[in-house]
Length: 293
Image (cartoon, rainbow, N blue to C red; front, side, top):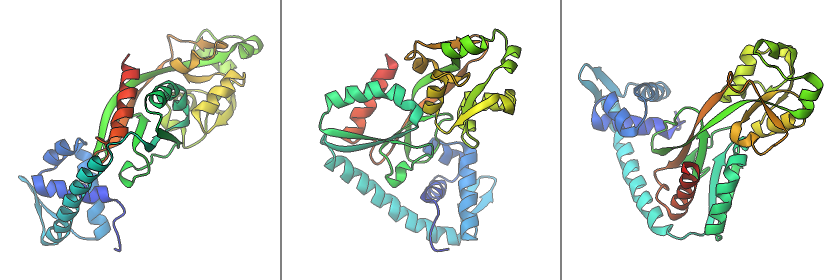
């Protein structure tokens, strides 16, 4: 094999070698026990060799594993030196700061981004809107705002930011044309806006539509939650919208608000190497203050 497909697998194996057990490594890395096992299995499969002897008392490094993990030790030491260097050199609140999130979140991030801009005018925020999760460990972004299950990548600093609630909505124009459903069964007489295949599983209300609404009723699909909201506002059908986003559109009316609701946890994610830099800390503080008020 010419190269590792994922440095994180090596990082996990290195931690298991140091601590001796999967559970100790999982606790140290703040990830699930099964994630540690999966990453070790992935690495051994890619290398085509055993790195550990499995014993009842824990994991013991094989002779091949010792060679590999000796290199990992050097890499870990260099990364710690790099971390110290970055923190020492990046104490100024100026330059670019890369933030990654999904497009539907700009509605909720615009206000804290404006606050940050006013407080730190010499920092240029670049917000990367992508459904794919950009790799913080590869420097693709400095700060991530993610929804869904808690991220468990090693070396990521993860903080719970807020909980978002969503429900079904329709525009007043749509309701004038089609009426307002007052029961879940009545939804069978209506048109829906949802997401495209491959995207829906990550958005709870899109997933619900795919599971409970007939395909023939989903008359409009888009690949972004923000565009789905625009379609709903423009009367193309009933669809899921976050409550705090829906409040921005007086023309939107809730549908079966008490019967149908979805909650998503939102996480603030940084990488340990840049977590304590001035720009990252400043933005994290603004975001946490905004969502905790």
